[in-house]
Image (cartoon, helix red, strand yellow):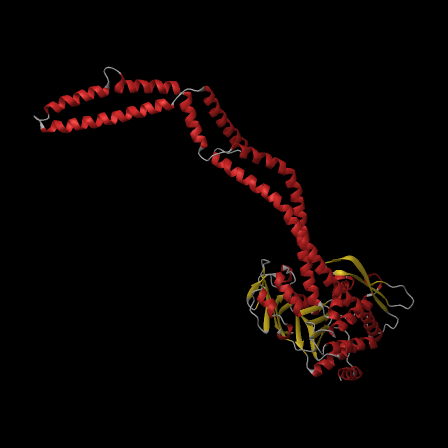
Length: 550
């Protein structure tokens, strides 16, 4: 429940610092004093969007802080899921700076508005004068049924499962579209792969072919040079090896006369051996080099094929061509696997849909089973609130297949006048009738489960006299199991509260400020007497106020 509220620099409020208790609290004050302004500030720490216009002093920041006792709300899992420190007395804080930037905190940990709103929805339920429109909202109408039968967790789980089902069906559609496109590309990819596969490329082939072609096209020139070199070494009458051999023989004859000549003779011998090896290699190369036009044509054709494939696939090397081939192979394998993936996904979707259908059936059965009971309780409550001829009906259209809300599409029908035709709630009811209908619904739901703190902003719209007293009795009964805060202008309701707060405004030289304070018993008597008779207090009004408070 809301334990404490701090508001600084918000609209007409310079600073408000007030405590709240459990049970039934009423807030009164003249029109325009700032009762609804306080609710606007409270809504900011519940996740509403901020507006820089709310700053009273444009040079200072606005601060709203609320302390909530959350021990009985079972929110530990929520705090853990959002990485927040769980405290039984949890503090929600919102700051709006003069430049329009807004920051939100839960127990001093910064949070985004989504988290703040999700937590706020679990702590406080604000029913303002404008919230009547929710009566005709399909989500609200179903939520009433689910709250009444106590299956909110099952419905949340179902919705999460349905969203997963929807994601899978969307993915299946994308896969089918991808498969159709892939099949149109498959022949093209297969042709490209077959072409590369048939080419039977080797990693270093291009360099080897280009080198071989150089040799083949210049074979005659190479052979001419090799022949000349071989002849110079040992083929002609006067050749290098014979000359060196003669030198070596002559040196050997005189080595005995000079010690250095033997080493020179040995070196010449070594050169002779090396040159003979060179000659042998030249002969071997000469043997391997030959001019063959058909071989040149075959080599050139192979190189042309490689160049063609490189140009076609926008690459420059055989290595890159092999990578292209691997990529195409992967695409072909992916196309082949899509069909299997689609089949598996269809099976999974079918299984999930069966589970969804079973869960939706159970949810629908509970809803349908509660409809007549809800209609009866609402009609009885409306009778108590001075609408003896009111008729309330819930109509349910069962859908062919389950959607996000299951099989059910409910609509609330209502008419307050005897013999008149039922019509959808928002199309036929007046403001006062809608207020009493909403009060009846929330009172009924509150009897089934512990709601968070409920705040009613003028739920008594359009009622007076004895009916107002009955509204007060219903509110007092609701407050026995929750914290209930009611903004009212009716003395019959104000008298039912356990705690009474009065909002007033004070006009100074430059500003008008709103204030709120908790009234003592005697101050309550005076305030309620004013609500009964106006500012001209009479002893009769004071006595009537005491009677209401008693």
